[in-house]
Image 1 (tube, helix red, strand yellow):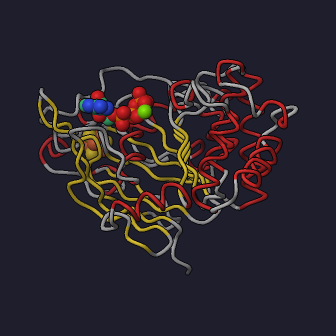
Image 2 (image 1 turned 120 degrees about the vertical axis):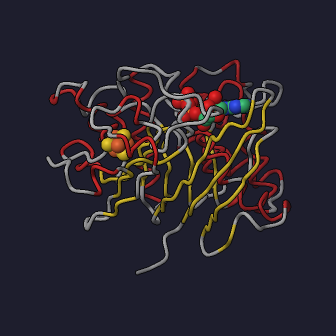
Length: 327
Ligand SMILES: Nc1ncnc2c1ncn2[C@@H]1O[C@H](COP(=O)(O)OP(=O)(O)OP(=O)(O)O)[C@@H](O)[C@H]1O
Ligand code: SF4
Ligand SMILES: [Mg+2]
């Protein structure tokens, strides 16, 4: 079998803060194939954004990668020089951040902002880069792009700004796009248009996508597989169909059980009873144990094993391991 486009193995990233060490990414492993969309879901604070940032070595101040490997297209991203990793970020892996309003520069025209990475990475003249920027803005459905290139971010609607962010991310034709909850600030119609656009671009260019979201509807429409995060760990990695029809891990089951079956593919991720843990405190061996209906003493004492299923899914749980949780 061909090597996956992205392979993340046992990645650990800590944030060293005033109030202690936050284990934001704690032994995370997954792969993304070329052209695949992997959903990353989980409660707020479960480590989704930090996982994405760690892959690209963009952790906030105080953040450090402690352990693990990240391979992209055969190259080890964690040992590359700062210069080389910057090239990867611009040319091979693009990221759309959680808040598009703050990611666009308010004092530069949108044309400049789309052009700049193209000029930098493809060494084009300003005129050719401008032509390419107009072409890309047209592709992301900015109307009259040849005029709008001179607009500043505040002159665009929220949905347009979102699409400009998409244009910047796609301008260098990356192999992997990381989109961190890119639709929360948009109204429903614009969200739907944006998702359609992403899907089209994926079909046209075969770009792989890591899509961070709280929205099960988006997961159902866009993703091939889903990684469910809890307390800095992936607790279940599963195909979309199995996520909805045959979830394995008690956390995933609890999430889905709190949504009526007919609504599961439409709704935002629900919350379940109890608080998610704060990640700078000592946690039980299975961090979900205090909220888990199936917990037993060993769950608090010994880290649950990662169980790989024959269909390629995996779950991190004692009860899945001993076969006592069936459907
Ligand atoms: N800049 C920061 N400094 C210190 N701790 C942080 C920082 N950013 C996030 N954290 C902590 O790191 C952990 C993981 O946060 P992360 O932002 O990855 O969560 P998330 O799953 O993306 O949540 P959300 O769904 O709310 O975006 C949390 O415990 C959070 O409090
Ligand atoms: S290991 Fe134990 S506590 Fe953790 S999810 Fe499985 S059954 Fe629940
Ligand atoms: Mg986040």
